[in-house]
Length: 250
Ligand SMILES: NC(=O)c1ccc[n+]([C@@H]2O[C@H](COP(=O)([O-])OP(=O)(O)OC[C@H]3O[C@@H](n4cnc5c(N)ncnc54)[C@H](O)[C@@H]3O)[C@@H](O)[C@H]2O)c1
Image: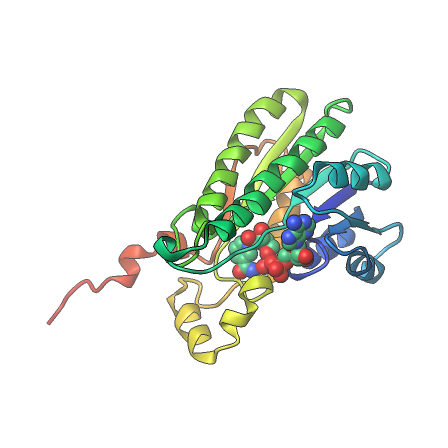
């Protein structure tokens, strides 16, 4: 049976990725800050053998212990845990900036390092990191978040070069306007939903399942020749600048 560890798996996009992985036949390790929340998510998944694991991704000892507890070198590791702190950059708290860098970038590196070391002896595996549309084009007011996600995209390429010859693929998924997880409060406002959804070339917000499908496809054998790639899941927003601007002014 294939196995997967999903960080930040207890809530939001992570929970959807765990559900999609279980549906695809993976035995899932739901890794999150609180063991009871990770276990509650694991208990709801289709199939058997799923477990809840506790670790803060910024703590390498906790990450190592969680992988030890999972027991086998996972076929798939999804670096999904992440946070955002909003505020204009010139006013932003430096503590908040450091916190976001530590969780989104250093935490992703710690987990990818652990995953790589477990996968190398077997000579196979797949790592999928969550970036964001903010990695492609920064959203004003999002503090350190865009810089961390751009850095994770670069880290993904770098890891893919070092781990590719060892049989391990490393890719990332960049979600756009997603009506779930950390963005759910933003889209609770019907005016924002309408404005943002209407600006998307595919004319709707994305769902957690849209993101989970992309993650599991990248991990699948159908993507066997894909590595170092950032798959943007945004309904076309990243390429829509000219669509948003008036062509003719009367
Ligand atoms: N929701 C969106 O619109 C959106 C868009 C683009 C990218 N993303 C990315 O998707 C990922 C998931 O986001 P979400 O919207 O589901 O967020 P969320 O806040 O709903 O869930 C984040 C999860 O990560 C866990 N977590 C936070 N810090 C952690 C740590 N230090 N160690 C372990 N677990 C930790 C939380 O407990 C939670 O379960 C993030 O990397 C985020 O940047 C989300």
